[in-house]
Length: 526
Length: 82
Image (cartoon, rainbow over all chains, first blue to last red; front, side):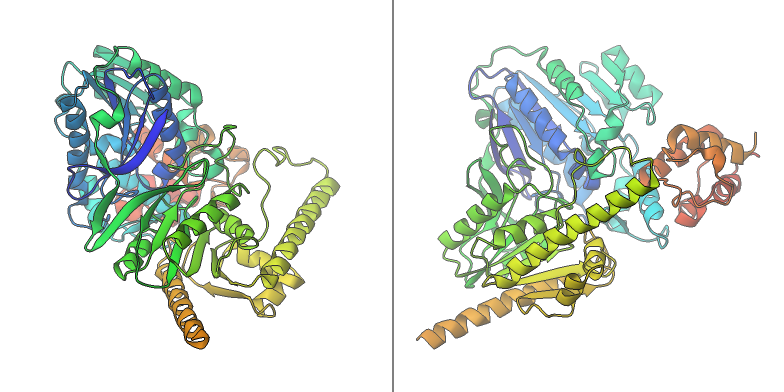
């Protein structure tokens, strides 16, 4: 399977897209995948990539469309007409495939993706709807419930924040107005509907699928779309079933594969005066988006392995607009970067990310950047701090970071010990282990030549952990000169809080300080 | 069947609580008892479908969902019998 990242040619404003396809022996059915939105898109991302790879392995050229205001596309959910742009992007991807020689075109819409489909699905032979949202109004109520369940202060009039994703009230209004119109589905389109028993599709949609296609209920889907990261298990057999369903009507193609069907631009003007380009580095390939050739001596690297998909995007584009070289990238085996050869990876706190950080910093230096400020979030920050011990990073900023690596799901005991004594012993051992790991990190960071800044939400677990032991309290008291700690209220762990922008204002100041320090050093040397 | 009883039955089916719903009092905090936000969504939507009511947006608040009693009262205010 080959894959590529870019912006769909001909889309205005630029629409991000990822392309997957077979190296040879392409089939004549092209697949367009429309992902979900927000926290769901985040949790389902690995599944989307796996589905695209599954389809590509069966010879089907596959394109994942990134809706306006999401992922690497231009636009913002606060823009007035962002929802209206979604169907046009899907229609463009379908039309390009059809015009370039795909005999059949299939569209796969996951959850909210169903609301992004064009009103008329002309030219679509197969439609796969995975746990589809048929009513935008119901989706908005669902988002409101999710936000309300986590926050006492949600009211009907406000914008919402769900798992770090912020939805302005204007966007929610536009989203509520959209619906999947079953009556408009072309009679000849085969429809596969996969839904969960706890969230059944409407009788009209089920009847439509049974008339020309298939309806299947699958309880494992709920694990895929659930809200906590550890539960986001991709139902692999289900993805294989979808890929096989898509491939069933395909024949050998006359075209050469995905690059013949879709033209992906490797750079695009994503905002006024901000041109971004796709960059690839390291082995396996890390993919990222960069604004290169900045005029400042300090460059900014943003590590985005976890957190909302556009966690750093607005800040990156704002810094790029000011002429700074900025790179944000995905660790190997996560999001759009290539998997490891052994197929293992994609989990949080993966230490192989250290090599990715080194490759990213090396890329920055190759662009003429003199100083590097690198920013990581949560587990990405933990990997960054590990990397900062060996990689030349002038300022490493860890946002809401734990200074130890929490046990991963498989290492954790699924059933807590029944004996009280054992439970206490387990807790004490975990605390000892965490503090010992943190002590190693603290002493190592204090000894490295660059600065380290730990930025926390005032209620974050990472900050509470530091307060829980003597060495941590010494760090908070500023006794390690090279390590600074800042905490601010209402940032939120996922930076979805009302004052999250303050973190970025702090990082902007660090960048300016690094610029000034470099200029001073140059003058002194002269 | 009272609204409270329907809430209990739905919580048992979809709430994914780590404790037996029957062990919870009507005033017990469901979120403290382990109700996740995702499960809360499924419970509320299932109750709305079951009782053929729609809770007004202004009542989709944590306080309305917090206990069996408050959720039942919210459903009754939205027009549910019982």
